[in-house]
Image (cartoon, rainbow, N blue to C red):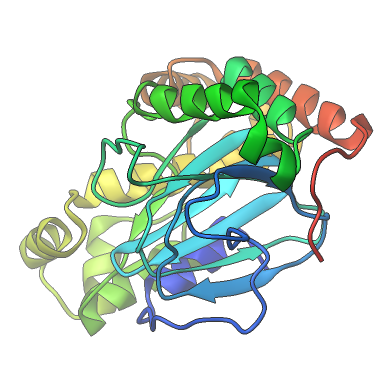
Length: 292
């Protein structure tokens, strides 16, 4: 399963770095900048850290990405930058379609500590789809291919300049793991008082632990999880009104205000964009190198 709730389950568990015997997102050769598309399907793999940066676009479905500091739920029409040498594990849903661009860390400046998620800009999609037309031999000897991949790398700091999103930091203590599990089980009705009671903490201690372990307040934690779940449901085509109720808002207007404050657009606009992107991904013919 790849959902907000399963992401919370993993945020309440220890991340153990590992390496999978079969790797579909690994670059064919260190230093080789190349774009590839993965066949749609449920996929799971882990790495102790790869030699190349990865720019991963989710065209359909969902990607769950986990690292030592926490994890991301990367939704359709979003992308994630995975820096070189960072241990990670990932899982996808059966309907997930990924595009992966490998970028040389020696020539690619990265602007954050660790991974980062952002919506896919139209230009990023256009450049990656163009890059998928080139195989390994073409990339090695074609000046245009090299220039396009350099352009992708140079634009990444701009594309990923947004605030952190779709992110759930890892809980370190058993008490905070209990808090995260409580949020997952009571998302619509969660409160600081009941979360503190579940974890055997005072509300004051809960607030302090949230800041110490998760680098956010209790209110910030609940808001982020609710917004993550709301984005997930909107990507699946759920009506805005039912999404508002499911994630715990008393009215559609309150949900719309909170959503616009967090993402800069009303949920209806996001719903439309998600539906359009999913249709495009489902009807677009496959291109480029497809491993597997």
